[in-house]
Image (cartoon, rainbow, N blue to C red; front, top):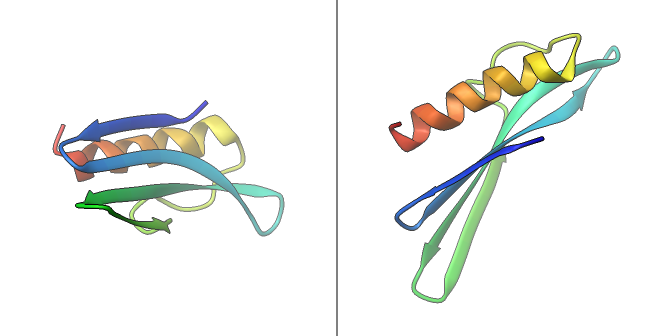
Amino acid sequence: MTFKETKGNKTVEAMVIPAPGGMFKGAIRVTTQRNDQTFGYTTGRGCGRPMRTEPAALELAELEARRLLGM
């Protein structure tokens, strides 16, 4: 399950990606719409360290996603 919210022209999605050692890392995908162009990037920065379980990694990513949106 992922967290996905839109505010204005910015969409932020929290997700989990695999990390080395059989662990999981939270990540954020940010998409911005300007006129007819879409800009997007994915980053794991600010989402904490790699975790042993997916739900724990997703929780940290969701906190960072909410911070980016200002919620």
